[in-house]
Each structure stands twice: as C-alpha cells, then as structure tokens.
Length: 578
Image (tube, rainbow, N blue to C red; front, side, top):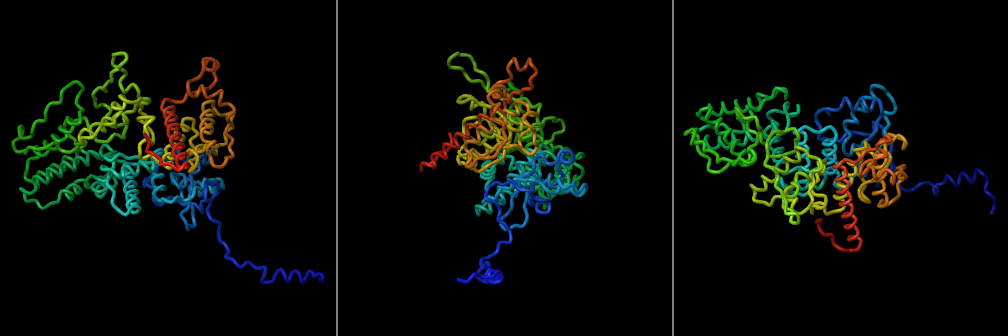
C-alpha cells in the first residue's frame, strides 16, 4: 500500500466518517453525591420559600464577621432538576444577602466566589429544603412566631400535595418531627389560629416580632369572646359576625409592637361587645376573667400544698351572667385587671411564666433502702424553665384527654430520666420512638446531635451530614486552624466524632483530623482535667452534662441504625425501636 501524503492524511481525517454523530452536551450534569465546588454569586440564588421574611436580628453582627474573617461556614447548596442556577439548601440566605452587599461595596473576589458543599436534590426536595431552613433558622438567629407559623403552614401544604389528602394537626406534628423540625400539636393549633385570625388584622405587629405569650393571650381572648358572643348574640338579634368584630378591634392597634397591649385590646373588645349585645361592660369582663381563673385552677397552677377551691359560678356573684355548664377549653393568657400571672398551654419560651409555682415533683420509693429516692428533678442534666414547664403542660393535657402521661416523673419509675434541650430534646437516652424506626430519620437525629456536641468547641461547621454511614462525617472546616492552636477539648471532640463516624463511610474521606492526642485528651473531655493538668495551667475543659447526654444518645441511635441495616442486609424485617 502506497504511503499517504500529509495532505491526503488530513483529508481523510476531516471526512464525514470521523465527525461526531451523537448529541452534544451543553452542560455537565450535577454530581450524584456530596461534592465541594466553587460557585459565583451570579450562579447562586436564595431559597424562594425561605421562612424568614423580616431582617435577621443578627444581620449587622454577621456582616461584620464576614467582612473581617471571610465566610467561615459556607451554606450548603443544591439545584432543582433542570434549573440553571443553584439555591441555598438549608439556612444561609442571610449570609448570601450579606455577600452580595459586600461584593457591591468592595468588589473583593473573596466575596464573589465562594466554596460550598453541593448536595444533590433529594426525592422529597421541597419538603426537605423547607424543613431544613426552618430548623437552621431556629438554631441561628431565630424566627418570629408568625414567620414560624407561615413556614409550618407551607410545609403542611407540601405534605398535603404529596399525600393527596388533608392532614390533621396531630399527623402534621408527627410528620414535622420525622423530618427534623418537631413542633407540638398544641403549638400548631396556636400557629393556625394566628395565621387565620390575627395576621389579617395586625400584620405590622406580628412581623415586628410580637411574642408567643401575647399571641396566645390574643387567641385565648378570641376563643372565649366567640363563645360568649355565640351564646348571647341570638337573643340580642345582632347581625355582626364575631370574627369581623374581633379583627376590626385588632386592626385599630396595628402599630409598633413596642406599644401593643393585649389589655387594651381586651378592653376595647369587651366595650364594643357590651354595646352590640346590650350588656354591661363589667358583666362581660367578669365572664372573660372568670374563664381564665377556672383554667388556672384546672391546670394546677395554684400553690403547692393548697387545695384548689371549686370555681364560683358567675351567677352566684352577678345574676345577669349565665352559668357555664361545663369547664371551658384552655383559653390561655386572658388579661384580667389585677392578674399578673399569665397561663399559656405550650412551653417553648424560657422567658415566660418564670414565677408560676408548681407542685413539688413526686418521689419514688427505693425498694432496697426503704427511704424516698431522689426526685426526678435531680436527674435533670440542664434545668431549663422551658423544658420543665413543657413537662407540666404535657401532664395536664394528658389528664384532660384521658391519656397516659409520659412525663419525666413517670419515666423515673422505670428508667433513668434526663432532660436536655436542643433541636431534639432528650427525656430518655435509651427509648427510641417508633417514628424514628428508619435509617434515614435516625441519621438526621445522629448528625444533629454530633453538630451540637461539636458546637461546644466552636466546630459545628466541621460536622457534615451524610446519607451513608451513621449519618455524619467530621472534616476540617474552612477556618484553617492549626492543630497546635486548638484547645485539648476541641481537639478531643473533633477526634472523637471522627473516630465514631469514619469506619462506617462507604468511601474513605481525605481529612486532617488529628487523632494522635485522643488517648491523652479523651479522659479530660469526658471526666474532667486531672489534678496535674489543673495545677500546671494546661487549658482543658470537660464536656458539659448536656453534651455528654447527647453523646450517649448519639451512640444509642447509631447502634440502632447499624442494627436495622444489618437486619435489612440479612433479609429480616426491622422492628420499631423500644
């Protein structure tokens, strides 16, 4: 065969037989696993359903920190299938807005290009994203009550679209807890009332930061007022609708939140009701306040050791007020002329109702010694007014509904109870609710506990959630701190979390976590510094009681997770947690 000239070779290479016949990809597909990448502000947008509507109260402090230190904790990002831009996956819209401001002001490249962790869009993408934003905002900066209520309402809408049917409040509470944002059912009831009845009348006050205790007082006032109106409006031949009357009264007070007074709203509402119903002002006011007092007696908020006196029927004092045949439902927080104590049915706020006296906790009998054992309260790892008050309210609601109480006092008779706050409050280290009986849900809880433990050393951003292993990985953060600059406790926490999680990763991770000092630092982390360390001035710190309990809970859940996966791999069925 004759040798081809360069010209003939080029002609053959450029012929149709060597051209590409298949489709040409315009862009690369997104990664199918968590992947670090660098994105620009032009490629990244905020999450459209972000529950935060008002300005973050910590906005200026966060901006000053990012200006001086840079972005220590870049927000995780994701992308919807087919979209041409990335979005914040959970928590980080405030940081994104700050980066845009700083880029406009300085034109520094470090504010324009940011290294982020990309996470693939999950199957239940919108629900996972929205509940993630709710949880992250709750932990960093907080949300106002109405923002939280609107976020929960949007999640309920997504759930109903997913299921094709309406959800009850109890089912909604269960679903939210399973997706990592626990909200008690009574709290959901107050949220829905606030969105339906209060938001149309006082949006400025609500978005200005009106607190939960005042909102509960308003919802309680509406309930009691509606009941009185329904009982009397027929005989008075009034054509006015109570919802319209209530919202008209509220709308006149839609001003600055600092000047808002529930007492003034109640006075105005009672006055207009008296005029329309032809009743005396004092008669209606007494009936409203009497409902509150009866609820206080029912809830056991009287002083310990004093028997609760039976409620005096209104007709025994003022003949014009009809008696109520049955006790009213829990109308929380109605304001009386001489009442300084407010009662509310839910217990999330640590600032509300600090002075309310409660009955002393029950004690259990020690069968071996014959003496009363330590009260359940002595088992509390980190006493908080919010958690203590939540337990008493849960017992009250269980008694009213005829259900078995599962509070800390009851748990003390059969286990060692604890009480630790957090995104997932702990009242029993060992018990695993059946709602957590799947690997995905267990991983969500495990990763959160690991993040809260790491946060004690300022290393929360080192904990990265994963869909494999035990639910998280511990990797070096973006602060680039040298190992020598870390305290022994922070070094031990990072090494401990890395040691727990690393063996279970499906693929090895490149990490610079120092585990060489774990043997030396672990004892001081769990038990406290030795006398020699304390006298020599070596900087050591013991893990807090709440952090230790979270570590126990993490280990318990991880053992359950591995047990479930082992059963699945063996072809067996997984039983619910016990």
